[in-house]
Length: 200
Image (cartoon, rainbow, N blue to C red; front, side, top):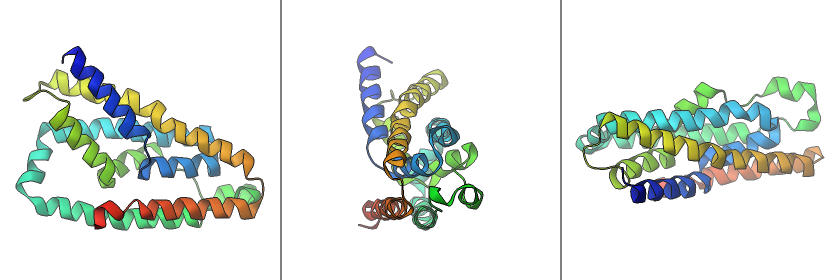
Protein backbone atom coordinates (compact mmCIF):
# COMPACT_ATOMS: atom_id res chain seq x y z
CA UNK A 1 0.00 0.00 0.00
CA UNK A 2 1.21 3.50 -0.80
CA UNK A 3 1.52 6.17 1.90
CA UNK A 4 -1.29 8.15 0.26
CA UNK A 5 -3.65 5.16 0.27
CA UNK A 6 -2.77 4.37 3.88
CA UNK A 7 -3.46 7.96 4.94
CA UNK A 8 -6.78 7.91 3.11
CA UNK A 9 -7.70 4.61 4.79
CA UNK A 10 -6.89 6.00 8.25
CA UNK A 11 -9.01 9.07 7.58
CA UNK A 12 -11.94 6.98 6.34
CA UNK A 13 -11.63 4.56 9.27
CA UNK A 14 -11.76 7.44 11.75
CA UNK A 15 -14.70 9.25 10.17
CA UNK A 16 -16.77 6.11 9.60
CA UNK A 17 -15.99 4.71 13.06
CA UNK A 18 -16.72 7.81 15.12
CA UNK A 19 -19.94 8.93 13.39
CA UNK A 20 -23.27 7.75 14.85
CA UNK A 21 -24.46 4.26 14.03
CA UNK A 22 -25.80 1.16 15.80
CA UNK A 23 -22.43 0.30 17.40
CA UNK A 24 -21.86 3.77 18.80
CA UNK A 25 -25.40 4.25 20.05
CA UNK A 26 -25.18 0.93 21.88
CA UNK A 27 -21.82 1.93 23.39
CA UNK A 28 -23.28 5.25 24.50
CA UNK A 29 -26.06 3.43 26.33
CA UNK A 30 -23.64 0.82 27.71
CA UNK A 31 -21.26 3.46 29.04
CA UNK A 32 -24.14 5.11 30.86
CA UNK A 33 -25.75 1.93 32.17
CA UNK A 34 -22.67 -0.16 33.01
CA UNK A 35 -19.67 2.19 33.13
CA UNK A 36 -16.54 2.27 30.99
CA UNK A 37 -14.67 -0.80 32.27
CA UNK A 38 -17.65 -3.15 31.87
CA UNK A 39 -18.09 -1.81 28.33
CA UNK A 40 -14.48 -2.58 27.27
CA UNK A 41 -15.28 -6.15 26.05
CA UNK A 42 -18.05 -4.64 23.90
CA UNK A 43 -15.60 -2.13 22.42
CA UNK A 44 -12.96 -4.81 21.74
CA UNK A 45 -15.59 -7.08 20.18
CA UNK A 46 -16.55 -4.34 17.73
CA UNK A 47 -12.98 -3.60 16.65
CA UNK A 48 -11.76 -7.21 16.43
CA UNK A 49 -15.05 -8.42 14.99
CA UNK A 50 -14.99 -5.79 12.26
CA UNK A 51 -11.39 -6.67 11.35
CA UNK A 52 -12.26 -10.37 11.04
CA UNK A 53 -15.39 -9.58 9.04
CA UNK A 54 -13.33 -7.47 6.64
CA UNK A 55 -10.84 -10.32 6.14
CA UNK A 56 -13.65 -12.80 5.42
CA UNK A 57 -15.37 -10.42 2.99
CA UNK A 58 -12.05 -9.70 1.28
CA UNK A 59 -11.47 -13.45 0.98
CA UNK A 60 -14.47 -13.76 -1.32
CA UNK A 61 -17.73 -13.25 0.55
CA UNK A 62 -18.18 -9.87 -1.12
CA UNK A 63 -18.35 -11.66 -4.48
CA UNK A 64 -20.99 -14.00 -3.06
CA UNK A 65 -23.15 -10.98 -2.17
CA UNK A 66 -22.73 -9.71 -5.73
CA UNK A 67 -23.64 -13.08 -7.23
CA UNK A 68 -26.61 -13.75 -4.93
CA UNK A 69 -28.26 -10.41 -4.03
CA UNK A 70 -30.97 -12.26 -2.07
CA UNK A 71 -28.39 -13.05 0.61
CA UNK A 72 -27.96 -9.35 1.27
CA UNK A 73 -31.74 -8.98 1.56
CA UNK A 74 -31.83 -11.80 4.12
CA UNK A 75 -29.02 -10.10 6.04
CA UNK A 76 -30.95 -6.83 5.97
CA UNK A 77 -34.09 -8.45 7.40
CA UNK A 78 -32.08 -10.13 10.16
CA UNK A 79 -30.40 -6.81 10.93
CA UNK A 80 -33.74 -5.00 11.24
CA UNK A 81 -35.21 -7.64 13.56
CA UNK A 82 -32.09 -7.79 15.73
CA UNK A 83 -31.70 -4.02 15.98
CA UNK A 84 -35.35 -3.71 17.05
CA UNK A 85 -34.66 -6.31 19.75
CA UNK A 86 -31.58 -4.39 20.93
CA UNK A 87 -33.58 -1.15 21.00
CA UNK A 88 -36.13 -2.89 23.21
CA UNK A 89 -33.34 -4.09 25.52
CA UNK A 90 -31.95 -0.57 25.85
CA UNK A 91 -35.39 0.94 26.40
CA UNK A 92 -36.18 -1.54 29.17
CA UNK A 93 -32.75 -1.49 30.85
CA UNK A 94 -33.02 -1.10 34.61
CA UNK A 95 -31.86 2.34 35.82
CA UNK A 96 -28.69 2.56 37.92
CA UNK A 97 -30.64 3.78 40.91
CA UNK A 98 -32.08 0.28 41.20
CA UNK A 99 -28.71 -0.63 42.65
CA UNK A 100 -27.45 -4.19 42.77
CA UNK A 101 -30.67 -5.69 41.47
CA UNK A 102 -30.41 -3.61 38.29
CA UNK A 103 -26.99 -5.06 37.56
CA UNK A 104 -28.40 -8.58 37.90
CA UNK A 105 -31.30 -7.89 35.55
CA UNK A 106 -29.17 -6.70 32.64
CA UNK A 107 -25.56 -6.88 31.58
CA UNK A 108 -23.41 -5.36 28.83
CA UNK A 109 -22.57 -7.02 25.53
CA UNK A 110 -19.80 -9.60 25.74
CA UNK A 111 -16.80 -9.64 23.38
CA UNK A 112 -18.32 -12.44 21.29
CA UNK A 113 -21.76 -10.83 21.14
CA UNK A 114 -20.27 -7.56 19.90
CA UNK A 115 -18.07 -9.34 17.35
CA UNK A 116 -21.00 -11.38 16.01
CA UNK A 117 -23.20 -8.28 15.87
CA UNK A 118 -21.00 -6.80 13.13
CA UNK A 119 -22.50 -9.30 10.67
CA UNK A 120 -26.00 -7.90 11.17
CA UNK A 121 -24.89 -4.28 11.48
CA UNK A 122 -25.63 -2.71 8.08
CA UNK A 123 -23.25 0.20 8.70
CA UNK A 124 -20.37 -2.17 9.51
CA UNK A 125 -21.02 -4.34 6.44
CA UNK A 126 -21.15 -1.23 4.23
CA UNK A 127 -17.90 0.06 5.81
CA UNK A 128 -16.17 -3.27 5.10
CA UNK A 129 -17.34 -3.35 1.47
CA UNK A 130 -16.31 0.28 0.93
CA UNK A 131 -12.90 -0.33 2.48
CA UNK A 132 -12.36 -3.32 0.20
CA UNK A 133 -13.43 -1.61 -3.01
CA UNK A 134 -12.05 1.90 -2.45
CA UNK A 135 -9.09 1.71 -0.08
CA UNK A 136 -7.59 -1.67 -0.93
CA UNK A 137 -5.47 -2.33 -4.04
CA UNK A 138 -6.96 -4.55 -6.72
CA UNK A 139 -6.35 -8.26 -6.05
CA UNK A 140 -4.68 -7.62 -2.69
CA UNK A 141 -2.42 -10.20 -1.08
CA UNK A 142 -3.22 -11.74 2.30
CA UNK A 143 -0.55 -9.50 3.80
CA UNK A 144 -2.27 -6.36 2.50
CA UNK A 145 -5.72 -7.60 3.57
CA UNK A 146 -4.41 -8.31 7.09
CA UNK A 147 -2.68 -4.93 7.24
CA UNK A 148 -5.84 -3.08 6.19
CA UNK A 149 -7.88 -4.98 8.80
CA UNK A 150 -5.28 -4.17 11.49
CA UNK A 151 -5.13 -0.46 10.61
CA UNK A 152 -8.92 -0.16 10.57
CA UNK A 153 -9.30 -1.96 13.90
CA UNK A 154 -6.61 0.16 15.56
CA UNK A 155 -8.32 3.39 14.43
CA UNK A 156 -11.76 2.00 15.23
CA UNK A 157 -11.09 1.09 18.88
CA UNK A 158 -10.39 4.59 20.28
CA UNK A 159 -13.10 6.02 18.02
CA UNK A 160 -15.87 3.78 19.34
CA UNK A 161 -14.41 4.08 22.84
CA UNK A 162 -15.18 7.78 22.72
CA UNK A 163 -18.90 6.95 22.77
CA UNK A 164 -18.54 4.79 25.87
CA UNK A 165 -16.70 7.67 27.58
CA UNK A 166 -19.50 10.06 26.62
CA UNK A 167 -21.97 7.59 28.08
CA UNK A 168 -19.95 7.52 31.31
CA UNK A 169 -20.10 11.31 31.53
CA UNK A 170 -23.85 11.17 30.94
CA UNK A 171 -24.05 8.64 33.79
CA UNK A 172 -22.52 11.19 36.15
CA UNK A 173 -24.99 13.85 35.06
CA UNK A 174 -28.11 11.70 35.26
CA UNK A 175 -28.37 10.98 38.95
CA UNK A 176 -32.05 10.10 39.17
CA UNK A 177 -34.02 7.13 37.90
CA UNK A 178 -36.37 9.14 35.68
CA UNK A 179 -33.53 10.90 33.83
CA UNK A 180 -31.81 7.57 33.19
CA UNK A 181 -35.03 6.10 31.86
CA UNK A 182 -35.47 9.04 29.47
CA UNK A 183 -31.86 8.62 28.30
CA UNK A 184 -32.37 4.91 27.62
CA UNK A 185 -35.60 5.56 25.74
CA UNK A 186 -33.87 8.25 23.67
CA UNK A 187 -31.00 5.90 22.77
CA UNK A 188 -33.51 3.19 21.84
CA UNK A 189 -35.41 5.63 19.61
CA UNK A 190 -32.19 6.73 17.90
CA UNK A 191 -31.25 3.09 17.31
CA UNK A 192 -34.62 2.48 15.65
CA UNK A 193 -34.16 5.69 13.62
CA UNK A 194 -30.82 4.35 12.38
CA UNK A 195 -32.83 1.71 10.50
CA UNK A 196 -34.25 4.35 8.15
CA UNK A 197 -31.53 4.03 5.46
CA UNK A 198 -32.28 0.30 5.20
CA UNK A 199 -36.00 0.85 4.84
CA UNK A 200 -35.85 3.69 2.29
